[in-house]
Image (cartoon, rainbow, N blue to C red; front, side):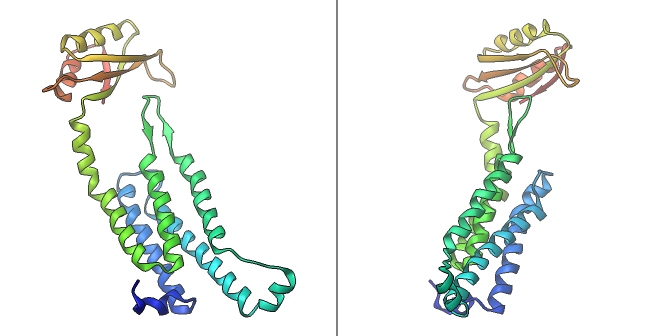
Length: 238
């Protein structure tokens, strides 16, 4: 650890100001990518989560310092004890509830919000590290989280585009048309693992989620092109 930062690890005005500003900066930058994609939690949400986490950790340190110095006599008389780690652990538990509200399973059998929820949890942990004054850990964690959310998205998209196992969502005009879709897919030599059929709800027409596995050399565009030629298919998405 860098001894030159020892002064900033103590509870003083400069240290508190630095930690609060650093928490807002790190949380905001992590949330930029989510905000650009119009996710449920974006720039301000990440900023507030990180800031609140840092404040919680600072509060724990402050209570511990005061109970062992200025409030020592009163604390001993009342049996008051402060465990800094227990206060910080409540942040992690609280973020679990916040993240659970973001994660949803759509009618197309797709899970949405996992990355946003994981980002919030990571942002909260960064805030706790900032509040504790663990600056070296904050720098490494922030760079890795920022890299994961900003740059690795392209790598993930490339892997998805090359994936052989797919979930195909289709909407058709009537339930009888689903057999036409399945026949079209089989004509391409694509293996169908399973089919989930929905008669239609909330204003949408009959639809199905088809679980596929492509053969070597096949690409997603072949399936989408073939389905686009069917007049009975209203929507087709991977």
